[in-house]
Image 1 (cartoon, helix red, strand yellow):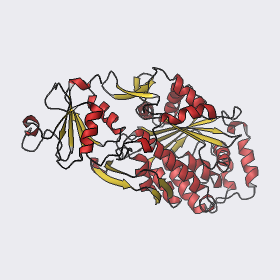
Image 2: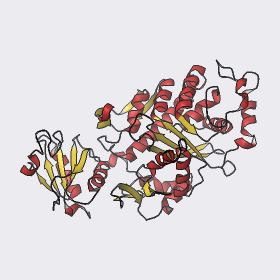
Image 3: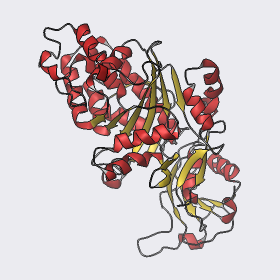
Image 4: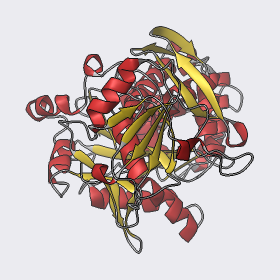
Length: 457
């Protein structure tokens, strides 16, 4: 996730960076200032760049592709699941950069495992052999998108927060205010986070919350909204790194490199990193961005796979259109036709905050998760999903749990689901399972019980 750090900061020093291909003459750098001792800096760069082992694959074709993977890391649930998957494409001759965000729930063929979520590839690779998850994932992405992706960089949350703190935070211009009442907290709890519109200086933790949130109100409740925010944070971090204060401060660089050494893995060697850093100085921001999503004009559609898991797949049944868009990301004519793939913020419905619970009243596995995704992509906040205690239920019904909930939410839900509404809960739902267990979440504002008529909608 932090290629911008490597592009923008590593060329100031290498003393503490334990990446593949560390040059033998690291002693040529002053251990305090992290600057070259006796060899001119440009000459040092030239020596590393033009050595045979340092030439970047794709350089001769003017298209260098790097896969960025962001994971929680040790201490987090699903530590090796990659919830950030971004293909960065660089055209060195034009000093252009493109970012393509791939959703974590995209279905992909994983050898030996069949069709599964693409964000599990890194975890599967680690299970096979520790330390190989990044390379295993790189190969999967290369095959899925029929694209030469020779390099990967994998980073965890710790590196993300420490590096942003090391540069004194990043300024983010929040375009869309939102509140997330289900942001992961300690000990499997939830906490509430909020962001207001406008420019704000975020430290590492705050920026991580902004980049990770996926249950926000006001149209921010989806992985696709999160992908756009991740691209925004990466761009802001690169800009901060390339300012004089961050880019030339040896203390700042030492802090960043220390974090990288412990929390980043990559197959890029030092000479390749040096070359990429030289490009970063000439690029102000990503020239092209694309979020592959399941919006009305997007490439993907939501479904339930044979194992009952929610999954995203190409609307056309194959990846040809997606691969064409990625291949031609720098082509202005092609790009013009893909700009409408992601819904504009002003077209997203704005709903007051309300906690929605969805219960599956059928025997169709995964139906609640499918509808959770559909509603979150429409701007609703789904706080809970689960199975109904009574099944099967014939018709989908929307129950008002909190009498103070906005009527606009109920109206829009009824329109979206083509479902009946009830202002009171039936007795079979209000009855407790035992002295302490209820059949629904008491803090829910709205309860949706999915019936058989919702399965083929």
